Image (cartoon, rainbow, N blue to C red):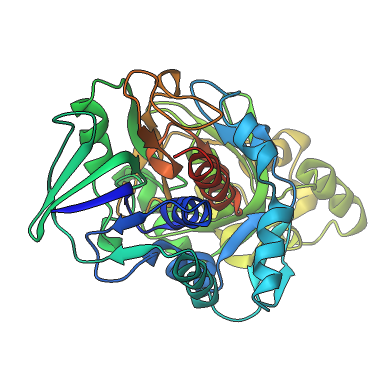
Length: 392
């Protein structure tokens, strides 16, 4: 049996950050992960360059049943704090768009940085560990693996959610929470592409690969970013963002020509170029394939001079106010994160400790705190890991 001060389940972003902070405080820390490699989600993130934080992080960028829960941790560990760590290790970075920060080189640099900090803090990381059982037979926690039992005064659950299962994610964290009586907010995929039923796919499948700058709205929430047609439905940043707010059966309103009043543009073109074909006029504001497809779907075509306001309005509405009801999402297979998780009502917002079980902590994606796309979920991992690491 191995005795230690702190056991951390999960060698991802939150788990490694917690380990670093606890190790710096002189705590004996052991990190367990079932994968053969640590921090695989960091490695694949940001197209291999890791969107490691966002300069504009605020509590408004997070979804939770308790929107105020994230405030304390985010205030005590800000993007500037992680940037300082990145610069300490000589990692070059740049701002891409909307405050999103990426490595100039490889995301592996962030992984190596975290592992180096763990080593400096005396943290032990054990990979390829299949966890059979987690219990608390006395005043200490016990974790049974194929290699034996580990015992610790504090147990930190940083196992993430079931998103991207090929990276080794699982529902272990939820099982531990339920084992100790913590409530759950039902989890579901978030930041995930939306899918269409066969009838709508007949129209959109031919558009696979077409992208536009769009504004997407659902239930009073809207995002203005890129949109991509796929063989299954819609993807792109705006769609991934709205997927976290979309509920089954709801309509999504899409403006396929963000910032352009298509009705006014077509009326102006009718005056200036009355002999111009409708599709040609539409192609001035949309990709040609999309312009062709919309004209065909509405059955409206011909010269602009022959089209009255009502027909131009009908075309414009299909562009600026396209309403679509997705059939679902692509699920955890492609979801970047998981919405829901361990109910924050049972946790301390200052330390991440479970109120009913002394020494038990939950951090990162396993908790019911989910960020927008663009580095916010990594910032939550750093902040919640730091908060727990200062307490264990």
